[in-house]
Image 1 (cartoon, rainbow, N blue to C red):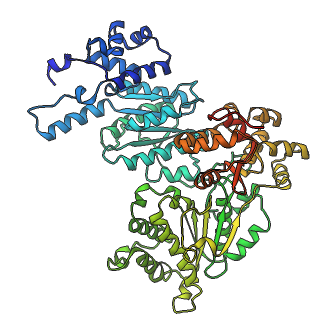
Image 2: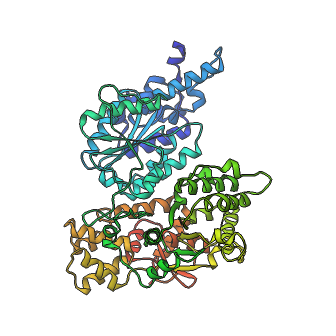
Image 3: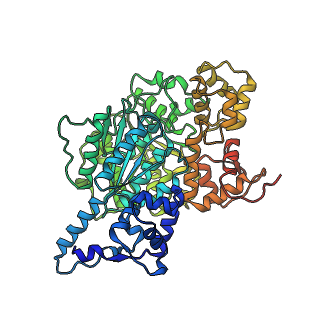
Length: 620
């Protein structure tokens, strides 16, 4: 770039002025304070905010102002003006120059808790990256409502750093943030988003979904302040597209999918259950598992039947995955090979076509059975994908396995969003179920297959009744805990509660297993008393704040869903919603069904969302 082009001035775009004003408001800067922070004159700030005056602002001043506001210059000035045409250069050189500029001014977002040492580590990494010319978004210590900033920054950032302390590793908000980041990676293939998970301290415990989202992502560990500069270099190298090389003592690179220890009495309950129980640890895992008779007994008997199909339906965090894990454990104890597959963890690329989806499905099952991938030998373009999948199972996956094979399919709701895939895939499951009953030469093969299908909502896609797997087999609809079951759970937590104590908690959260367990965990560990919990539960200071914020974040992302739920919490009467909206809110665990109407699942949700969602005057 010539000296002349370096000195040329710019006017802010209309959108740029809006971003300047918005970010100044967020940071609480006056024009004078921004000038001081950016080390520019007040006149330059005023000119940038008032492009209609016609006075241009120099490039270096705009860069300083943008840096002070955690913005990119192209957030303020139109990109085609900021990067003028590069004449007399070969296309490859133009691309190289652009990449150099982009890497130098790359945007980095750091997600962290406000507790120590997370906060100090985040600040140190931020300052070092800024010194290298990077633009860094760092959550303020007192900034609690940063969901909108996160979504905005995620769209623009080049690198996302997650500091995974013990608290963050089990956070629903962190899990949701990483899920959105992985979706963006898929949606933005031409501008790779780097994700850098850093475990803080000794804890490497991740919930099941978080491990799945970080599958294949290199994780790192911070133990002492001497690791900080090394981690900064890791981030800089990744942004430059270099292989990560750290001088001196290498950092400990971790697998992001290391096995999760079974949760025992002293550990916080996880928002996502483990789909498999390790051999020899089922007793530990069962310490707080409350049975809902006769459901478990029926499922344990059914999974041993040739060609069995078990369907488990309940809203989110009601214990579906925990039940599936125990069913598969019982099958394994009786000699079955077991496989679990969660569709929630599949990349969106998997759902681009039926053929790609079924290939991925076959590969996952084969990998879990530790069988070599032989799709190329069995996939024949003359036949359709469903026929090839059936052949692959019948002639290879099931034929190569001496024992029965029990497959747990979790979060199948994800497939409902892709009707062109859903109809064929679910029709395939129904066909396999029927094949075990035909009595022909292949029936013995299909009798080896046992399916456990887990979903959160009603099947709202149109399906031929004779091709649907949702009207055959054993259907299980998991209920909430009863008062007696909550009392049993309290005793297992060594809480000497009277019935009225149990009723007070259930008046707030109902019999929702995760919310009940989370309350008892905090009370058992003297974090809070029952009276304090009842008072602070629907606030940001309460023990449910992380859980509630994730729900709010999802409702804000889908305004029609948020508007529907605001209608539900605005009245004490049951509300009739569009079926698809009612299904989605039910699957999220936010409403109960009363005929064709819905009500809030618990008073906790009513209290919290009445204060945060727009709604009409409350009816009595």
